[in-house]
Image (cartoon, rainbow, N blue to C red; front, side, top):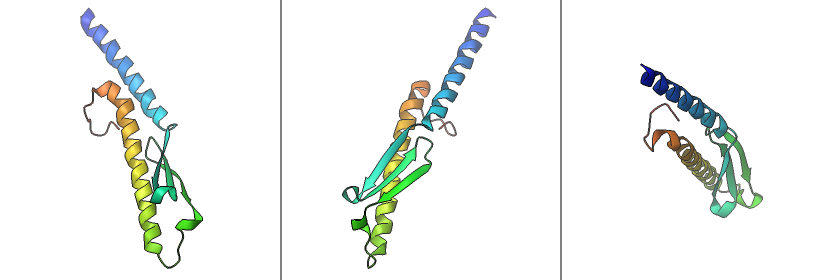
Length: 103
């Protein structure tokens, strides 16, 4: 019974550490870029889009589709990087296993 109590304490401590790590992801930001840096998207570790920066040279009224593609590419790049930091931070607890709904 003593081993069970010890194990439950360890599980509770790990859960607390995981929750803290998930909360800290909100404070971590990454940037994704496209078009050689003419479009930049910034997201946090929870994959919330924080900002988009578009340099004037990316704006061509005759080619709106290109700008749309650049914005989409920058956001996707940032989201991929956010996934990477989440996997890196949370992977300490999961041993690299992908647990659905955890992050």
